[in-house]
Length: 78
Image (cartoon, rainbow, N blue to C red; front, side):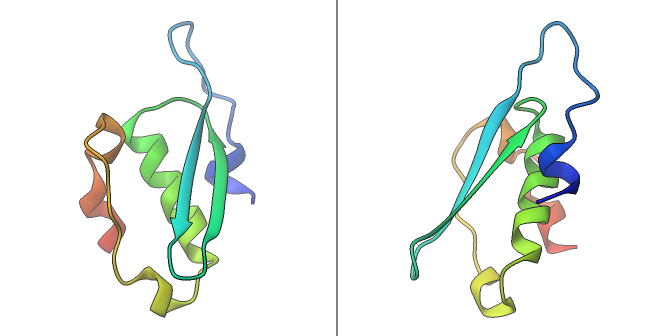
């Protein structure tokens, strides 16, 4: 996937690339994308990019963990 999943240009000395994963549980479809850091902005951008590939019925609900990457989860509704 292009876009948010491959944007590695803006890195600081304290940030490191991370993997962002998503699983569509019914079909057990795994989505993985490399993000520039573990920030909430990078996580939401990666989720938005990954969810575009899914049919609308598969995007009905999302379960987030308690990490800081989920801080901007409300943006996914947009």
